[in-house]
Amino acid sequence: MWVESITLDNIKCFQQQEINFTLNPTAAHHQAKPYKWITLLGENGVGKSTILQTLALLLAGPEAAKELMPRPAGWLRDQSSPGKITITLHKENGDMGTFGEDKKRQTFSYSYSVTGSKALEIGNAKNRQTYTEPALIEDPTKILSWLRANTFASGNQGWFAVGYGAFRRLTRLSQVIIPSLEQPKRSSNFFTQFNEDTSLSSFERWMVYLDYRLAKDQTDTKAQKMKRVGEEAITKLLPGKVQIVGVTAEGLIEFLVDGQRVPSISLSDGFRSVIALAGDLIWRLMQAFPELDDPAIASGVVLIDELDIHLHPSWQREIAVWLQQVFPNLQFFVATHSPLVAAGAGAKSKTLRLDMVGNQLKITEIPYVDLAAGVDRTLKSPAFGLQSTYSPPTEYKIQRYHELQSKNGGLSEAELSEYEQLQLFMKEVQPLGNIPDPDSLEARMDALLEKRLP
Image (cartoon, rainbow, N blue to C red; front, side):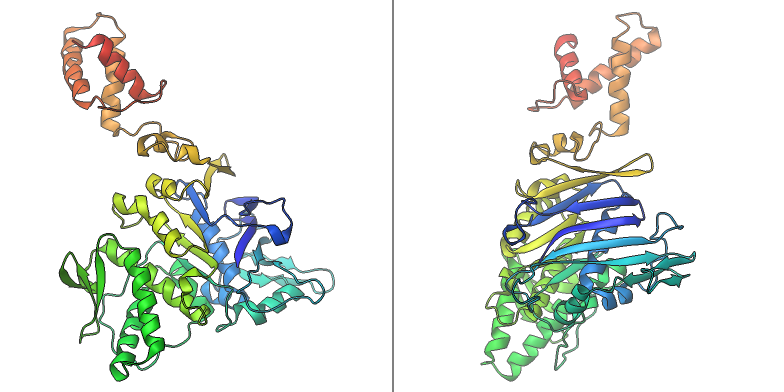
């Protein structure tokens, strides 16, 4: 399964916006191909998380959506009319169920209406109803009825989707040994997007459970396979030579980091964030695709808000590559503030920048060339729109230097002293080995340094 498009109508900052994620949108449905990585950029408050939450609610299904967000207060842009969110999904071969007989359907569109605190009518003339509280109301269609039975029910194979909020962390508690690991509800795939206090404990519980099974029966091939697949996925996403050693008597997962044994509870937040995401993701893929020898090759949709949180720049530069290599058939939707994450997604990704222009939201597709020219230029490109990458005090000194220099010697004694100090400062901050854009602040500074300074 992958997402072809979504539409947000009268939702928060979105007046009416359709966003397409198909690589070849004019092709026939059976030939359609997805963008495998979609990056959402923009300042805080422009709707990146709203897009991810909208996807989560639609991918979770009506019942799970109401569990995730029982009262969508504040979701309407205009309280005088209902809102609507719509998705179009594309079915893959590994997704359960067949819709249609002579002509089997591959694309499935469905919608939820959204109400607010004022009385609003939903439905057609025959079944119109009035709602006076914020609510999600699914549009009753045959497609949605079929999806309920084949897609959204817990335990159904395929139709995989999972979402992670900005706060992704392992629990800091030891895990007691448990004799079973229950099948997760569909809604649990998206808990962290709607409740930042939810920890991703499934990886630790899963490892403890497998340790328990193998302690009872070392020939348990199913447990051996699950343990191997999970460990491989996690170690591929961690930098350096990091290995999972096993489970301690206290129920803690132990890692070998630079030759030293470290329990998960003592790892840095960067390590714990990646382990939590990768461990939870591979475990849920195993549940959705139990017949696959390697569930990491399965298709589906993954939503990640603020992927760069807790990650060192060296990790930010690589994380998109790692995720796409380990999970090659998943479609990732990622919100980030990091130029390193955005550039790391590669030329075949789709990058969208969200901006508020007046009271209207504008979505601009960013060409990869704007992301591939180094961090400094990327930050000043349309992708991020920074005027300067200098700190405000440094930029003020540069501008002040220009002002004094433009007076052509007509400086007061105080200004001359200030100018001499700024000359020394300009020498110290001159970029080395950097060729800035001709019209940039850096280029102007370089030109002045070359022509004017002794």
